[in-house]
Amino acid sequence: MAPPPPMKTTRPRPSFSYHNHHHPDRTTVGATRGWGGGGGKVSIRNIALFCLLKALAVCIVGVFYGSFAIHRLLLPNDDGDAYPPSKIGDRLVVPPLPFLSSSSSSSSSTAMIDAAERRPSVAYVVSITGCGNDALSVKRGYGEMQAMNLVVQGAAVLRHSIHLAHNDGAHSTSSAASTSGGGGSRYDYEMHAMVHPSAIRCSKNLHRLGYIVHVRNTPFDRDDIRDEYYRSVVDGASCCGSKEYIKLYAYTLTRHDVAVILDLDSLILRPLDDLFDALLQSSSSSSSTTSSWWSKVPVHRHDDDGGRRDDGNANNDDNATSSSSSVVEALYTRDYNMIGEGNEMYAGVQGGFLMVRPSERSFQEYIELVLEGNYKENHGWGGKYGWAFGGAQIQGICAYYYLMVHPDRGIELDRCKVNAMVDSPRFEKSGRCRDGREKCDDCRDTPLEDVLSAHFTLCGKPWECSARGGLCSGLHSEWFRIRRSFEGSRTDVSDDERNLPDLGAAYRPELYHGYCTGPGGYLPIKF
Image (cartoon, rainbow, N blue to C red; front, side, top):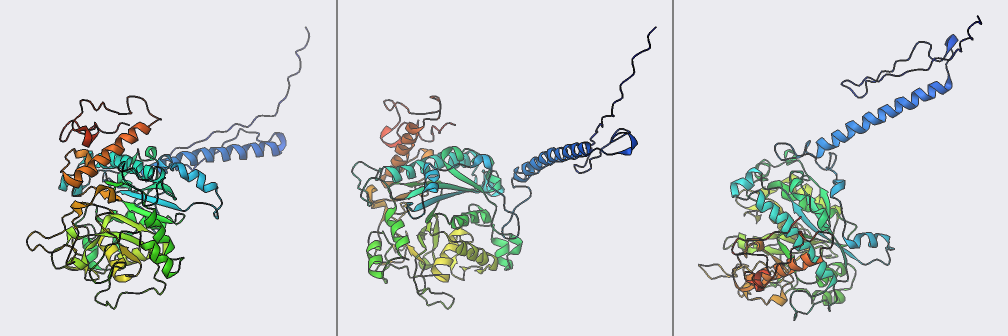
């Protein structure tokens, strides 16, 4: 019987076991006896393999826990706020959500053009501070459905109105003539949305509408406000409390030449190039040339200033500063409806429209003013501005900034033509003008073709299907006409999402263009 063949001897292969029980960094590696072969010699190849596998394991664990941490950071908690809350400066700021980021059609092309050849650009900026489920909204009866209508319906039609203004010129009526000469705007644009972490859930469709979404928390910590009284009221008597300050992030969009802060219940009816031109030319032209630019701008004219400047320092305030260059940095309208008779000159800036030149310096200066908290009980900012609803936030601090701190940097526009709310010009009892002038224009009589932009406050929201006649009905009709144009432009949706109703049997088609079945019977945009 032949002897059995000799057995082959092989070097034992190392085996690894990974134990991840509770801590991702507590990884143990166990090897079989005889690691590296007989005689205790260590194989360089095996060491390299061991290191590679260990590094791979650490990467896998790191990615898993990193994803979990980011998810927890951005996921709203039971209170509706992000966890953990973010802050500015030496503190965290919640980054934009990647899946919510999208740019307008102009953004990719302008980025490739040489800076010397590119067209100037405008950032239109909206803000969303909540989804209607916070305590303040519930108290005011403003629920989640109203919030969703504002975010989706308002954002869609506003964005499309801006698209038409920049591409089709005067699109309000067939007889309207563009102040820029027709053919659309000479400016590129992008749509931006500043979204508070508590509003992420109801803002998910903004990227589909062409908005670049920035998730941003309030740009300061309330506990850092040095004035005790202002610290106690910063979240009171307003639509959104201190969260409204996320509007200030528009100042940080410095790659744009101009930023326009708008509320979602706004509408752009024709190009705003004359306003852009005057704002930009004020720093680069001679006084005579600059004057010609301003002659095209609908400026609010006070009785005592001849027209161009807003007399923000009429009382020669010692705290007011002056710039020798007199560079205009902002155009705004004021909300005289929120102020009592006798205090007209202290009315706040209307928060639904603010056109600015982006500036990190201005942004930081605003934050310092907030932290200083020079807001006096029964008087407002600087003892004068913003003692009214919304005055403790944007409407008040912007008036303080452009009328007292820097009275040479801002100009008030004609509220009948820009940010038009169709308000009554006089106090009911006395008959005096709300803006303090001897003679005042009645915005309700403004021709529709003269309105550059509208703000649906006093006229009611279009999606309530309750137009009130006069210019309000004309503006509502424009909103619905642009809504129908938006529906017709939707090429990336199925037929059941695109909604172009037959006008034959529609309810008041000349006004609602098929999107209202009756009062309160709005047919929403489908997603």
